[in-house]
Length: 374
Image (cartoon, rainbow, N blue to C red; front, side, top):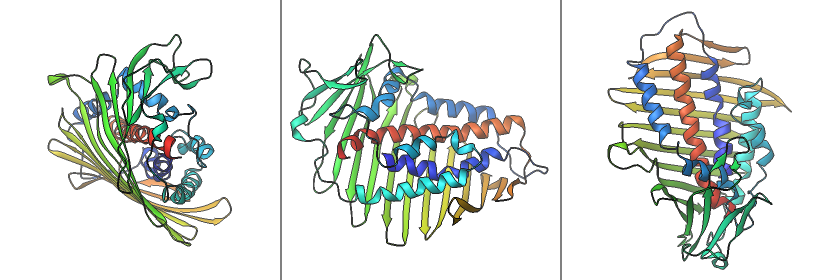
């Protein structure tokens, strides 16, 4: 959902700090045991999403609505400006603070949605891509959609436009099934290839509260293979947000487990606003055989005047508990106490990129629910 994208952009400042801290003049006591193997494991994580049917789902997930138009909330314009590339420019603190403000603005939107997610007037309908209008439209001739949901046909994607290529080539389908009950909005999403292989199966839930909400996405994404060739990433993402007249708190917790090789990702992000100050905290852990790589950090951003920010923070990278590198951030710049070899720097950046790719995927998982709720 948009709130998740806003949060990831806001919390991303710690990743910007780490990626920028590439050079230094001393060494640390801990080292990666096997950077090459770690790189291969990260490739295996990304392989779960490297299929035409997942690409077809990811590219158009924001268009999956009865009107066919992408859901652009109040954060829409800002989110374009806070893409991962833009977060590495000269003003990451300003962008993180702005994203955090937009995130807080989503609390009242999602604190009082009404169910069900999909109005029953749309049940059983199938939507296909219309190249003339660049959106989904209903195809009354198609049957087989869920009795309590809708179906969207998926297509091969043009890498330049990131929309279905022309002429259209069907690669699969996405079924959205409304399972809302007892005050909780719940959407079950199943994505299958044209051959019937299941690539994605997860449920998004949103529970409104008083000036707060809870949201989750749990399920799996995989390459659709069987036996030893299967690469499947099971995930469970929990998100909470709340606000008062003077403060706000947000928390995102994710656990992701790959079947083969057996590795896992843990991510705990939080942010607290008090007045004009946001404090971002990240605890990221990559578990692999015999080794745990962690990235822990806290960054504080205070808007001292309109468009003027004071920044301070520290990020520590550890390998099996030993310090691999410490990075300090301030308005004066970035300092680190660990010189990274080109190989270490490359695998560390790839590690952080993999986390960002997974968050991109999870963001796409929330889009269909947002399109109907919003």
